[in-house]
Image (tube, rainbow, N blue to C red; front, side, top):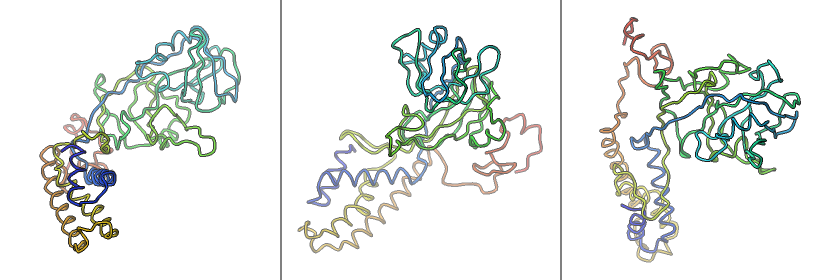
Length: 356
């Protein structure tokens, strides 16, 4: 049933309820339903591209300035990623600097690229997320690559898996950047990435300056994740992840088929519409003598019964309501046999004594 039809049914069930308030209650009910379980329709996949590093040319950098200027060679090398419709795009990549000549820029700090000025294609100007800490240089070497990734959708919930299809191995995603800080504080480990760690929390504007930190090029509230070792040689990934789901916006929007209309209506009545009418009974003449505690209890009971049936139906697509407590490889067990840290390739399992 479309969003508009759900609103009309709720308003019709409780005559006098404002359609605008009915829209709010339908969305609150639907949003709650989306949190009741990891629904099968919220599992999705995508591709993540980490291009090979760019090192051609050099940069003119000033210590404690957040803008840097590329020379002609560097500008030519970076221009493709600065154009529209390029994956991942220069503002989704990072850059680090080192002294000129033979010293590696891999000892430099890593900066997010916030903006690119292409007014002069032979001298691109990059705005970074913070001031440059390296010494001023008119001929600084650099590395530009993608070490941080953001989820592909704004309503991202959690990663399910990351797989390097070309090299045929999965990444471990149960770590944070703090582990990389201990192992490799200078981030000199570069090559194929084997780990994905949580790096930064939600992106929110500074309440004083209004500046979004650390990167305004991603959706507000989106987390940032770090790949390690840094994939400077270029790497692409097939990823699967869970979404939170989004509320209704357009009147014609329809919920996924597994979610029945009655479930949304029962939730909206039992937790929102009936309690509101009970608190404002003078505004609902036809419900002046209604027994709202009973109506609320009935609606909530109906919701719980419908929710259980809906979960059973969803289990047909993605069974997760029943766990075998004796299974040694069950999700989330962080010991030798736990899948979070277990070497999950079949060769290891077939060549070792694994007791279940």
